[in-house]
Length: 195
Image 1 (cartoon, helix red, strand yellow):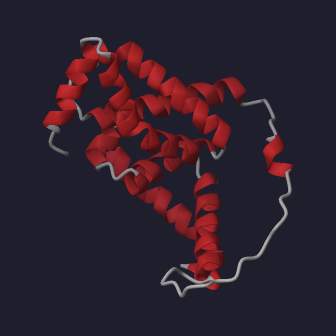
Image 2 (image 1 turned 45 degrees about the vertical axis):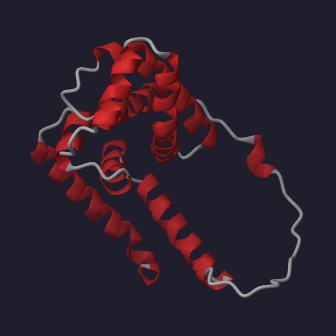
């Protein structure tokens, strides 16, 4: 488990005291991580934005209840998870299509004037394809397995922190995460040349 950050503890104390600028700073520190987790759970930009807003609204309302027994990020990711699951229950039977997904843009070409160390088009295309295949495979996992994979591999939470976020015993977290990895490996087997 990570050691508490004294600066973060002070910021949270200021939030509890009702200092609006402290809460704004807390949002700035965590909004990208919250949004990224929300996007990886929902696979939709708009939903991720809504989940992020709902998460910070809940944090604002409940910051006084944060005891500091766990790291703030653990408590925050638990709220993200709960918001996602609550929204999923409400929208389970609704079908939505983003209008932005059908917009076609004109392509233009620009010639390279200066040599760059950046990956070339082939490398970039391969990386994009690998990431796309991996994200698609992760999205096929059951919710609880997908969440564990994202919390462990993307957010860098420890087994103990995941157990706390999901209110599960550590042994259950380890076994479910292992099963998720095995299932993911099986689903990626057809595209193993990318990995």
